[in-house]
Length: 455
Image 1 (cartoon, rainbow, N blue to C red):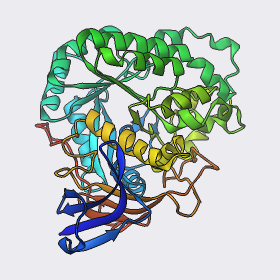
Image 2: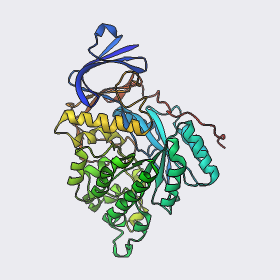
Image 3: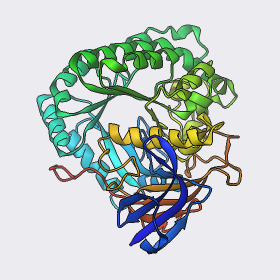
Image 4: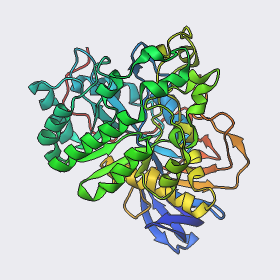
């Protein structure tokens, strides 16, 4: 089957160009001026942007976090993602107490297999580091799991890694091509905060419990270690102007990249001061004075825009007693709003907004995830993951998820319409709706490693 997408404004090689895109089977076959007679079907894209499929590089789905289970399954998360152009979902596998990372990986694959509408890639989160654990990591890296997530905080939750531990992993696994994703908040600085002077019934106190300095110090420490050991490092959900500037200033000294999230651009800590402010608790917290940070991102400072989609059921967010905000699960939905809120960064210049999506939500995530030879661009030979985006659709509210959660961006609207979304050459979304909702066709992008059977 050959499909011609014609008369669109195509994002390719850092420019918007009036081109046609020919898809043959699962791959991009050609880009240029192409005769309609060469295709079996034609998608008319006049007035639309033609972009590579979006990649949400940072999501949490179908998992237990503390006492709470997340609201989105692989089916529901990939459904809302694909309906909004996200053809690849990157999510996490966390090693639980008493299990190996290999077993954790098998557990995650069993949840996703046959239930995912988009393609799925996993980042690994190890929590123990015995010689056997390091051996499991090596096995998984050799099998194609190249991204490893570490936390400089959450000691009580059992996922903390000290700076010494991170340095040792940079040394032992960096030469294998491992990409290290780091959650940067300095645990000692957070523990040193005197909570006795804070009103913990007020969600705004969350911003004081996890101060900006904690993020900045952790970024400076891990960036220095990554540069010293030539490790590839990506800092997740950067929320501070100083932290972002430090990474930009040191980018030429090593393989450093970072992401930020829509909530850190368009929501500020005033949302925590609302009567229902607990619904916007996330870590790092929402910050004050967003204008300079947004302007830095407008200038292209961030490599990736990702959501940190972490949706909890409304009843779980609202179940606290109103006395201690630390009982509220931290996280917000965002997956379904990713292209719409990212567009707002450059909405005054539609071509720049389309390029921003193609770069920060397609090309760069694909490269950092190790998928650059398969996804992230409309170049011939790559997967035919294609979004036909109409920027002039009817205005409508944002829906970050289809699950029973509180909306992260209430009152926000979008005029972006997803006319067509192709996943490996097949139209899976038309006018914002799945064409085959009962038939998930997403693939698990990493192979199943040699792992013990689930018990």
